[in-house]
Image 1 (cartoon, rainbow over the protein chains, first blue to last red):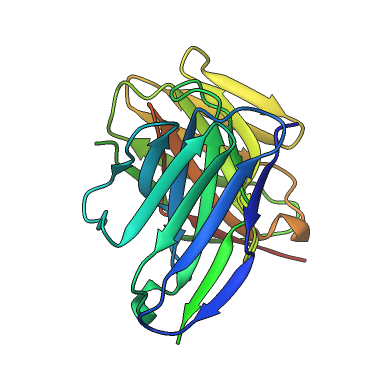
Image 2: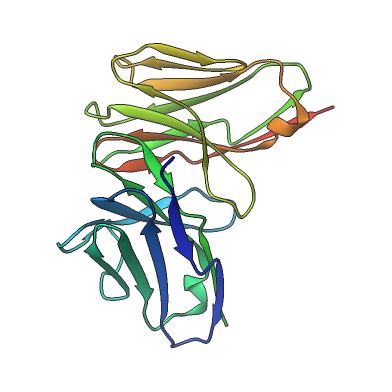
Length: 116
Length: 109
């Protein structure tokens, strides 16, 4: 079946630094990738949608200059949390679709980010 | 945009009883409705899904029903077992997947 590899699985960084999270689709081409954030005991909140070769579409309230998304190829999307602060500490998870609207999503294993 | 509401937020049942979780969605264009089980710190795991052209789907102890007119769908788990204890999320899809608020299910032996 479809597999999405997400790295790192956890990261601790200092306030003010940037952290990059990668998601790779291993056995299929992901035309669309989605990035979610999940705070403890809460739901998965969609942050942005990225399509290969174009700019990401951010959900309302998500700062595009803080959460940089790059989807340069059909198998790789990255999320960079810039100038991280403790309130950015969360579980970040990506999801890949072979075509938006068709259903059938494959999730990465998630990244636990802790900003100290 | 799409808004998905989910109830109840917590649900406790005795082993062997049934559990029902309900969701409503707002966007009539939504066409795909998956249900996920998530354990702490792990990725959501798809347990069953239904598309908008189907009213009901069953897979062993798990079933999902969809009422497009009312814009709601439900998850039914029969003969619950302690290992069913987890957080369950519904979701609705148009061109992106929007999750419900989640239900923490506890099954007591």
